[in-house]
Image 1 (cartoon, one colour):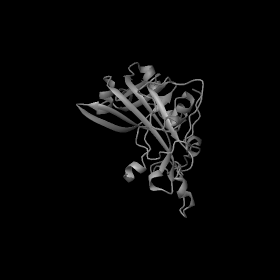
Image 2: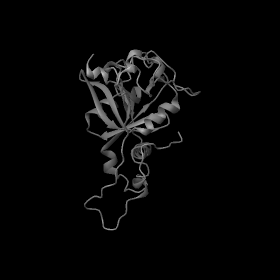
Image 3: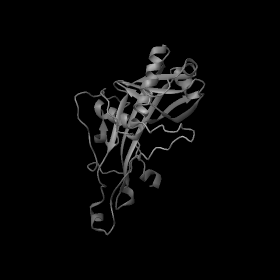
Image 4: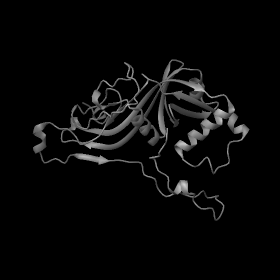
Length: 253
């Protein structure tokens, strides 16, 4: 087995930790996405998560997605920012961007968001893994053309990445709005699922007696002190929404 396979933690089948009863969790909830052949987690199925609240919590903590689609016969996966409100994800880019133009045409897409919470260090190399929370969304994007909805989608995107920023900045002017394309992707039943691993490693029983360190190396996104723009006007303080920035935003929907 290769080291790439050992450390892979994707939503799909590439997971080297084959211990099904360690670090597994299935979140329960009344409001769930329906499961389909497309979204059913087959590899370590009890790590599958279909509860909407749990999935939205992952999406709200993240802000970078990888978007997969096909263009001119070539599979493409690109990283991009996103926003969420309700059952919709919002994407944006310059109007001339290849990705946005391709997705606006209605091409099938796949959006994945992954949060890595720790490296799982086992005694046996085969059982190394990662603690992670990941979401995959299948569907199609719709371009937002109505101006009022387009501006609102820009606000949603901004508030997802940097809550509070929209309320203090100069808002986009007509030329800037025209230069930006906004897309929305509805998260529908049978098209959304998550996969979660947490907890310690699972080793072969005979390896527990070995003098080998094993455990979890926690990882998290660190927010450091803000750095002023060199051209910042003298006396302008760091605003509260920047000073108190966190990637665990709370949303009501």
